[in-house]
Length: 82
Image (cartoon, rainbow, N blue to C red):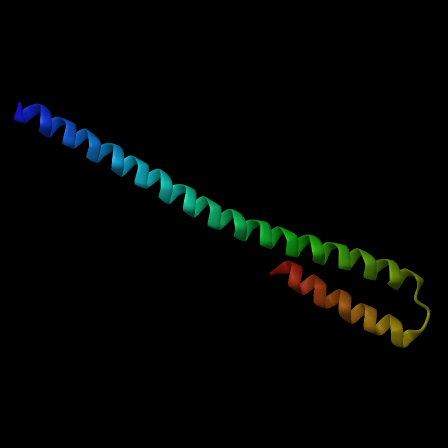
């Protein structure tokens, strides 16, 4: 009878360890997924800003305004490269 109890205890421990490992994997996957979504959202925002600035730059005629837009474009390009 003791052997059956030991076997059941061992199985229960294995099941618990698998459940813990699965829970840890889900927790880690959720964290990286949230980080990935934040990184993706930031990149998309930069991409849209870059597109808007490029459009403004194509229409800008004032040299001072063009200079500001070119500086902003360079800043966005640098941020996107990171």
